[in-house]
Length: 318
Image 1: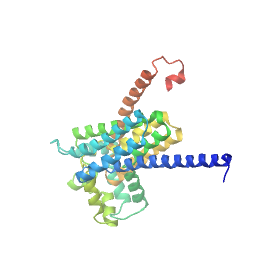
Image 2: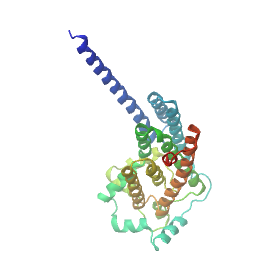
Image 3: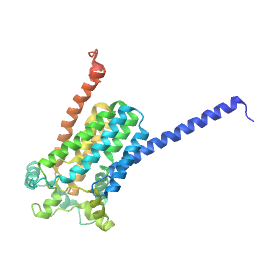
Image 4: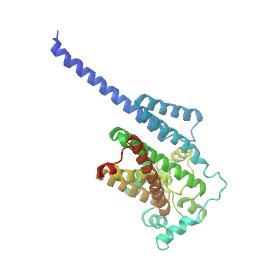
């Protein structure tokens, strides 16, 4: 039988192992909640929808211990749940869908050419899968998990700036929602179908139908998308708001990587026929507006937390 001296380290090791197991379990539960959140859409049956929301909120409640963080997480999740519902009505406002102005804007920017049309004419053959198609589709699909993974990573690694990223992302999706409600705008692939543009392929649909027929239509119905919410591009706006916040708050290599992701996303959207360049630029502009507002909000929070006047340059920059 072991002595007290030898049994104490064993007991301590068992406690540490148990702590690690619980920590991994908590993180996994929150990741599950975010995974469900990423796929909450209005097209699913109501009982599935309610179950996903319940599990997401329960996962946050069981995982997040700090009251302030719990409040931010709950608001973040409910904001995305509401957004998923509201976004589907952008084509039911009675406002006429706009086709011409983004085409005219792209032609003005690119000397008479529409980049989507030019890129597809030069690089795409119908339903032919190449490296370019694989890369751009993969980049496009990352949008559905990117914001949630960013918020999770910041919460784990940089708790101080967690509210800034969460509020910035939520503010961006709602600004984009308001603008798309005010000016419903058709994407290039839809303009190609109506004859407003020469034929434009919706490459993601073409490739999906070629690889797994019927899967795209099923996922599309479940996703409950809005075909006339192209302006501004939220696929670009959300990565852009993350990159802008990261530029002043994260290490420079991470901030540079975030901007490279913005460029990759914007380029992919244009090539795939999902957005015009002007939609992408508008997404960056919307992100800039939100970052300005969130930065002002954060400075106010910091002043309220520490009402004493700044005493140094470094304090002012914090």
